[in-house]
Image 1 (cartoon, rainbow, N blue to C red):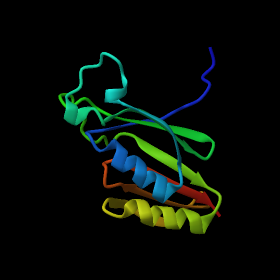
Image 2 (tube, rainbow, N blue to C red):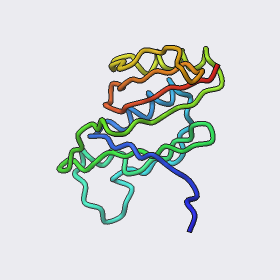
Image 3 (spheres, rainbow, N blue to C red):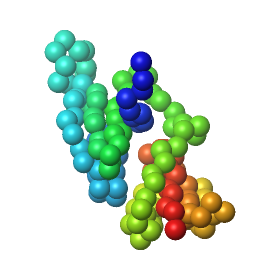
Length: 137
């Protein structure tokens, strides 16, 4: 069976909705359906956790990111071994989105020219998600 598509899945500790709205604003992604813990019949969720995101589909160009909150008793530490790589065809757009996503986060490699003929940079956003930005010149 061939792999049809690769969908990175981002997990958050109760602030998925906030992160989704941030990515919607900074990256222009389109939010599909959002299912919340309280939407699932028979799923035990304390009243204060019913609005947590169980699953969200986020369209970004031709790709799809998925996101959810973890159950409160299963927190997930921000990972450093995975980066979501965004490949651009518009340099000013990439630079603007890099700056927007870096707000409140940490730039680990500023945007700079590379030996492979692109402008490239890396950052970890305010939600602990690591990103790579690439745009061929």
